[in-house]
Image (cartoon, rainbow, N blue to C red; front, side, top):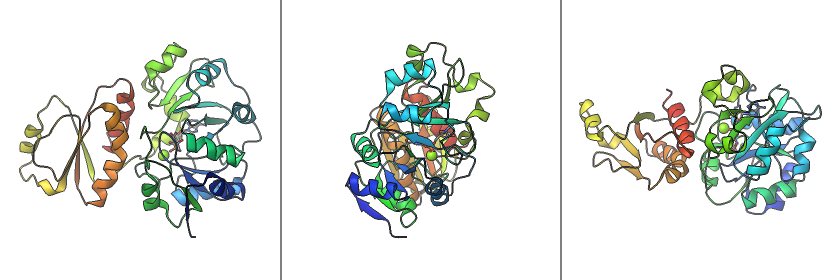
Length: 322
Ligand code: TXA
Ligand code: MG
């Protein structure tokens, strides 16, 4: 298949309307979209990404009416999160309507819904005129794409179209919160932090506080966000020089560093981030750049587990397979 590259939302949306699959930018990462109501089109997403069939997709909407079109019931907590954070990097999980095909939700009776804040995403969704299910636009297991070039790298020739936009602002995937029960449960950390969710619904609980959570978010069981290189985490309090001494045959050309503090010499590639936001924004593209250069070890400084730092740590731990 020949992939069409365009910056025109109407041209990209035409592929969705005729049963194709299209990558498009959002404020978090690039997504790979299909018409939610077209089961055959949704199946193409799983095939193109080589995504396990048990991993549900997020529905992207442009309007509040579309939320009601998909959710059988918008619970009180969901209503409050929607008022506070939509449009934005938050996904609410709700009971789905019968009309939502099971392939979109991997057989679950719930559906994750989000309204992107990014202008081009919103214009694209308006032009599609239907809810668009979209996982991140990477091959399954690879880091999520934050540039259209990263989508090209993984999916050129496998999808109908790439809507080209700027690199994504946030760089990590949306926060996912299950709103189907009385107490909301954070299923995936993102830039809307647990602290922020609790300012809206105080009882919201975190992932670690609920044993049944893993079963509730099948996608979190799969291997994620991994570069080919080995990811090594280290604490900012421990000296990077200690770390180098621990490895007797340290070979600079194989090693890279990303973090907030200067690691000194001894790395082929260094990404110094001025803030935790910048670190989150840069992480996935840095992973990809390391793979392009054949780096073998990526040393990642850990950060404080607050705000977007919690989401960043989550992605770092998954990449390091901890
Ligand atoms: O920022 C994002 O959310 C991006 C952009 C494209 O919107 N999308 C994204 O999709 O990250 P994906 O498929 O890579 O991750 C979706 C996550 C998975 O961990 C999945 O298990 C969870 O959301 N999820 C989706 N629907 C769910 C549901 N009904 N119940 C529980 N978890 C769900
Ligand atoms: Mg993904």
